[in-house]
Length: 127
Image (cartoon, rainbow, N blue to C red; front, top):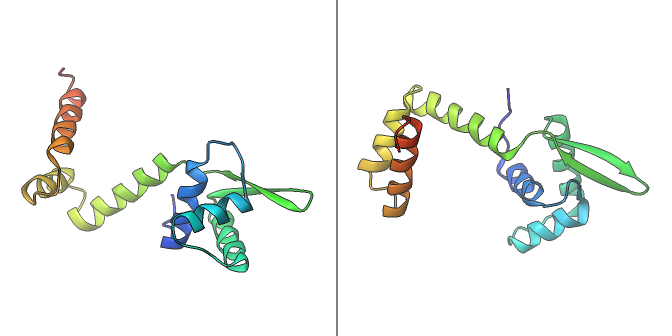
């Protein structure tokens, strides 16, 4: 089971997931947080990275004086797990309730509605 992340941990993982390189270095994460307007103290980031390692989201490999971080849980896997958790908690597992709320609550832009419609048709084997 994929654990839930705190907001701060999720911000870090978004930076790591968005890195085109296979491994992510500490300065890359620091710079990424600063660029998002969420600068972090070095010690705080070390603690958060340690938590992500303990939760099984990252692995760390020490190379000289630096750590190289590698993702162990993909962004898609995390999103899927959190979506399922949300569906179970809020809609008692009823996906149509969520979609209905998105449509009837006017929470989708026209382009998103059309994209969702195409995905649903494709999922039914229709083109």
